[in-house]
Amino acid sequence: MDILQMLSEAFAPDIVLLLMAGVCIGIIGGALPGISSTTTAALMATFALTMDVTHAVMFMAATQVGSTYGGSISASILNIPGTPASAATALEAYPMAQRGEGQKALAVNVMASFWGNTIGALLLLIIFPLALSLVLYFGSWEMFWFSIFGLVICAQLSRGDFKKGLLSACLGLIFAFVGSDPIYGAGGMRFTLGIRALKDGIGLIPAMVGLYGMSEVFTTLTNGNAKPLPVKKDKLFAFKEIWKYKWTTLKVAVVGFLIGVVPGVGSNIASWVGYSQARSASKNKEAFGNGSVEGLIGSEASNNACAPGAYAPLLALGIPGDGITAIVLGVLTVQGVQTGATFARNNPEFIYLLVLSILLAGVFFLLIGSFLCRPILKALSAPLPIIMATVICLCSMGAFSSASRESDIVIMFVFGVIGLLMKKSKIPIAPMVLGLVVGKDLIDSNFRRAILAGRGSLAPFFTRPFSLALIALLLIVVLKDLLAPVIKRRRKQTASVNEAE
Image (cartoon, rainbow, N blue to C red; front, side, top):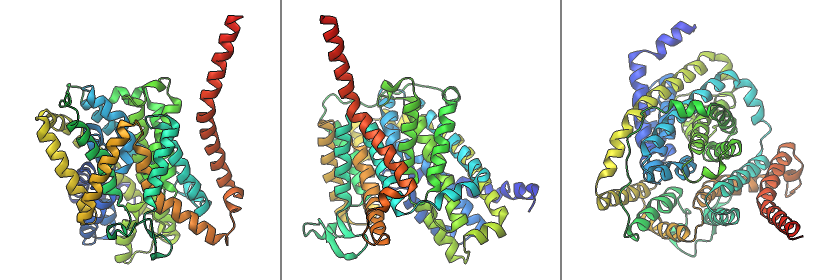
């Protein structure tokens, strides 16, 4: 298939409509609290099975692109991440919305998401074979340390001090270990206290919706001076902001793509690592946590670049990079397509069509997201009781829809109270959410698999090259945060003594 033929196929009216439908569905699914990107993709898989292989993958890719961006909408205006990958976005976008800069926050989000998606798609095309060689060095040992690294980064960057962030992350891990054992299944129940509703564990969606959504409702209801968010008109497109931080955008997008290439890590960790990279390169670090444009770019460009990266191990090795590509793998398997090195070699045009569809989907969500900013913000001018009642309904629907269990609504309310208490105590919520995300499926499972693969030995955790590199990074991060205040305090004491003399 030559380039002109591929372009004519990608720009065919039926393909354009298919991609637009996928993007719109993805944005809605990502923006609704509790309806995650993976859930949206799972619902759309039924329709994808009725299409041919190429159209099915293009449709699923467009849905993923739309939902990854869509999560930033509710994170920005309601402080409720539509997807776990938007938790870092909420740290910066919601303070901007509270200042009346909601439209600016949404404009920066969609523009950063567009460039992150574009850079990620181009990297998928350019360094596809090279990036895959990295995957071969990542075993369960490296996945364990990578997850711990992401958790520590999240604890470091969230509001509040580092110790409170670590406490929040540990609480998230404790909650993640509730339920059946990841290795032995229902034969090993843990920390359920005999409660039948907890035998399958604490669902991520009900807990996340409770910690962010219901805690915000409780905070508003207990604050007699609460008022609707102010809304100021601003530009539809944030070209100026992205150009100002163009090198940050490029750097975090590359980082996000490389994280996407590593199977199982996903955009949840990519958003925090990108946010960390943006903060480390910033000349205005004190603005982070109070509405920083750089922070928004770091989170959104990174998690959107991660989405194309997740297709690299799927197509070349038959290993899904995240939850959505796992669903795509299921669709391909049902249709009799065997992914892996043979498929990539025999169907080189497939990767080009996939990249074209991701790029087109990015253009669609840029236009749709930009022109939807003002109508979305106008809805916030409604009376506060109506807004809060709507949020409660959305949260309840999101919590119930994840597994269709009434007990999940109870879990949502319980975590809403926990979130309220954490806010009152100034303990950051984001590390707990990430602890829930990576605790069972990444940290616990990979640790157990590594122990089994190493025949009970802990030595590979500390001797494998990539493990050593991640441990070194962890030590640098932890020691820097723990020792920096001590060094600064001693310098002040020394300076005061010298002045007294």
